[in-house]
Length: 255
Image (tube, rainbow, N blue to C red; front, side, top):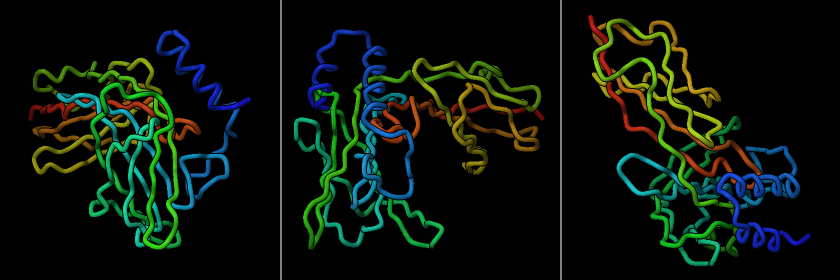
């Protein structure tokens, strides 16, 4: 069955939001194998190409409208002249800034650059295949794609302990409100005396965190921030499709 036909069918079905997402994910299972190689391109994963890896997702951050976070990672950074990002209707959203990047070195000490940019979501943005056109200095352009469903993932809030007042003792754990549609969370804790990140979790499935011993001290001033995401390394939706982030919530512990 033609995939473009299925995609059009989904967009015309007047179901509720989560029903539509379920249908898209079910079709993804039919069209893509379940295994994902995060280090190299695979023949059936459209996020990978010989140019690199592409992912775009919808972010909900405090105090601003929803926006696109766009990522492209590549070993071929020296050969690239520019990377353009397009919507499903072939309208250019923007161009990645190649002067700003993170460096990742693999086990063979080979350097990869990760370009990350934020873009406004266009008015009347559509669900569908967003894509990058990677233009090379001496070669033909290469396309990488990511399916995007425009939606809003709720921002969570801390349940325990109560951070609206100074804590009498060092907390042993944190819990937060479960976000509908979120499968994973990641927690960041900073020491506000020197603005240093002192703890970063891996992806956790439950809305709770058991704190390591001796991480926090009496008399300290800290902040906690929680990122929620709907999925992880999905064959259709990329790394994930929707994410939300709390503000840095400050708290202090009595001497």
